[in-house]
Length: 248
Ligand SMILES: [Ca+2]
Ligand SMILES: [Ca+2]
Ligand SMILES: [Ca+2]
Image 1 (cartoon, protein in one colour):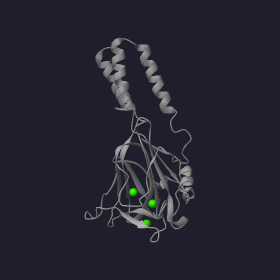
Image 2 (tube, rainbow, N blue to C red):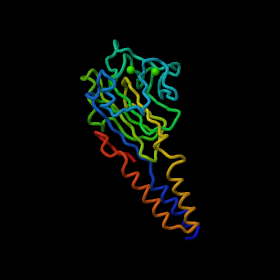
Image 3 (cartoon, rainbow, N blue to C red):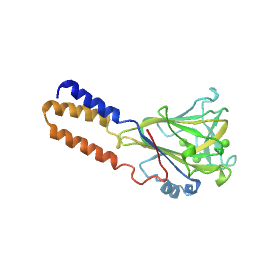
Image 4 (cartoon, rainbow, N blue to C red):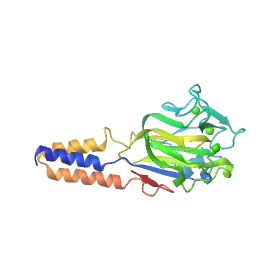
């Protein structure tokens, strides 16, 4: 093959590898006053970093901001359980409000993530939260059939999971409401992409590998590399989610 054809092969692989995130949810019955039991229900193990929103300081690397709130409010508003019984751990949760003081919530982490989980409480039945990952719309809460009305279950709606496909990662999650409403978030679970995502990413590596091997005339080695990568991607996320929407 001539050089332009090598480039066409590389571009075709890049285009085929579109961004993919999995959105899933657990209902209020996954909540448990014993956090260990709740974590087992939610699939959270020791590889996750947890922010419990029990004080204004977040775990290192995690920050919170708002899109449409009062710019003079720079600290997160933590609400005690005596005021609102929607907490998933401890005695406080993070308040966010659309068109109120706090504004919609944007969570950012200093490292790339493969998974992000957070509980949602006090979302009224008519409200739909849009879920953005790195500023791209990837789903909405109305597709999460496990989520419950906030009028029962001590105002707990459910637990939201965002998971990146194996060759993807992200570091920003925005939860945007389509109307005026107030939310409480708690028990944020973060899983870094360190172990799961090769850097600088499988596509550039695959592309570079193909270039190099083609130039060396090792066509059999190329076929093996593509086959191995495809098998790895296929075997990810098999059977873990209760409810999965696959957005591309
Ligand atoms: Ca809490
Ligand atoms: Ca904290
Ligand atoms: Ca509300």
